[in-house]
Amino acid sequence: MSAAPTSTVETRARGINDDWLAKRFETVLEPDLPICDPHHHLWDFTTHRYLLDQLRADTEDGHNVVSTVFIECTAFYRADGPEHLKPVGEVEFVNGAAAMAASGRYGDARPCAAIVGRADLSQGARVAEVLEALALAGGGRKGGEGRFKGIRHAAGWDPAPEVHNSHTNPPQHLYGDAKFREGFKVLAGMGLTFDAWLYHPQLSDVASLAAAFPDAKIVLDHCGGPLGVGPYAGKQSEYFPQWQKDIRAIAAASDNVYVKLGGIGMKVNGHNFHELLEPPSSEKLAEVWKPYIDTCIEAFGPKRAMFESNFPVDKVSGSYRTYWNAFKRLAGGASAEEKRWLFHDAAATFYGMETTGG
Image 1 (spheres, helix red, strand yellow):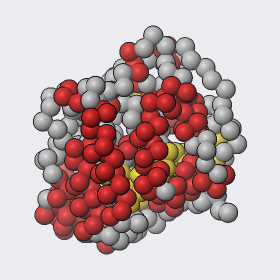
Image 2 (image 1 turned 30 degrees about the horizontal axis):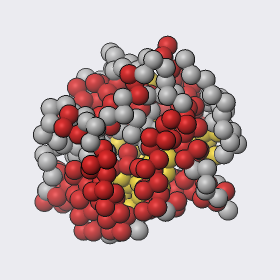
Image 3 (image 1 turned 90 degrees about the vertical axis):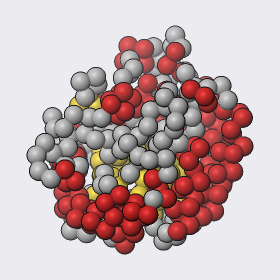
Image 4 (image 1 turned 60 degrees about the horizontal axis):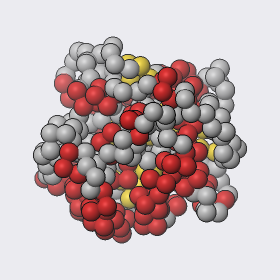
């Protein structure tokens, strides 16, 4: 394995208990509904392993997952060479896993059909070298041509020690930094996507970024990172109105901004599912998540909203099967066309993959 992972990512890999997860079994709902899971990771940490075999065990557990999108997580960086090019190793590794899956030896599904890597946009215009190297590592010569589709530059920051800041060690308002925006302009000019990941008190930074680059393709990860630990513990109802206002502002900032519906089963969200004697049911997950999911779908519409697993990070609160059952319950009132977008085509459209059509 290459360079050691940072403490934030590896910390979030802890606490996954397969014996606890096995205590809940549910029948798969709507098993034929095509799913593109637009957010998962692969890693091999000392605390937890989640590679292609583990991913397939989840995605092939009853739901019709036809493709997935890998999101950077500091895994398998190059051990040697220039520091700014070490993240290219992650895309090289994942592209190899995707090639294994694309051989057809494991079935028709296409795990890691799209890859989101990491580049430090704070390098300004010099980041072009890294983006070009990532594109080559993903099987293309320019933005979006191969499996490499774009980057995530996480910006999660909070003064509370209970809230672990992002693995990028960002400043408080990274997305407003002049040098960052210089690099972002290069990214957008290459036609690459951007995953925005930060916490709910910072959401105005995403609205500002989207307004400044209305043609850029941006997706907000994890419903905008609603916190529930430290000073935010038990106060979700207090900050919910402001979170809701910020979500609507981001959706209105540009038609090119999307949102990922999920990633709110992490410990940092404060729902404490991991403390239960048995894993929560899909009904319980849907009940707790409903205010967030409904707000996001209402603000962005089904064509700009995509359900995500955020596995294996969210595995601390439930199984893959239970999670997607919860999402299907949350979309229970949607039409067949709306479900097509929410579960597959919004993700496929954003990342430049094949849609289900219709």
